[in-house]
Amino acid sequence: MAYINNTFILRSLSCASISLYYSMRAAASHLEMDDPALADRCELEMGWQQPRSDHARAQLNAAITCSRSQWEWHLGLASNANDNIREEQAEVGIKLPLNLSYLSHSDPLLLQDDWHSALVINLQKNLDIDNGFATEIFGIVGKTLGDSDVSLYANLGLTYGFNEPTQLLAGIAAAYKLSSHHHLIAELYQKELSNAAYQLAYQHTQQRQLQLELSLGNALSGNALQLGADITFYFGH
Image 1 (cartoon, rainbow, N blue to C red):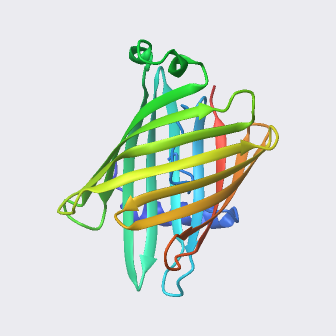
Image 2: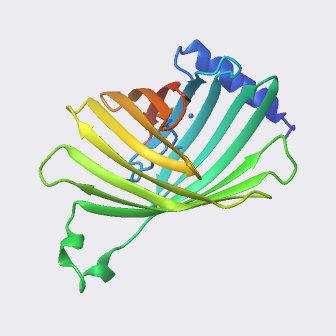
């Protein structure tokens, strides 16, 4: 098989995303918090994210996610530039559902069908730096509030980067189902020490064939406003 330069692949994906007006991000929407559900079909997601800073260029992302048996995998690419420095990153990850049956003796309420949990492991590689690896490991717990259309979920784990200090990854999110085609999501999270942020998103799903997402986020302290747009295509069984 002929060798294909990673930069050429990422530029090709970027051009494709711009031509769709929405550009690209795993599982990967620009939402930072992951929910415990596994993908029921394969998903191809493309996204665009624009920081408010005049010196920062848009970030382009692409990811494919599929589930197999009782677990989910994803593969993603991201490209961004800041002050004429371009960074390109690849990510591969898995999500495994967890069984909470061992909690039955302490609290039977935790075994209700509206409780779900999962473990996520992501391996990231900065393609422009030798040994530029990072690992994310975190758990997810989610719950549907009775018969309502509101779901809550939380992420808690660690991010470890090569030659970088370990960071705490923590956050909570709430999803509200307006209808079968419209969803609102709000999340509060921290991926770096003393750097908490929030994000709001609107999702529109068209007959389970594709989903459009618009997002707005900012830091709780200071001003780090950023806008995002994603399109996700569903395929397979």
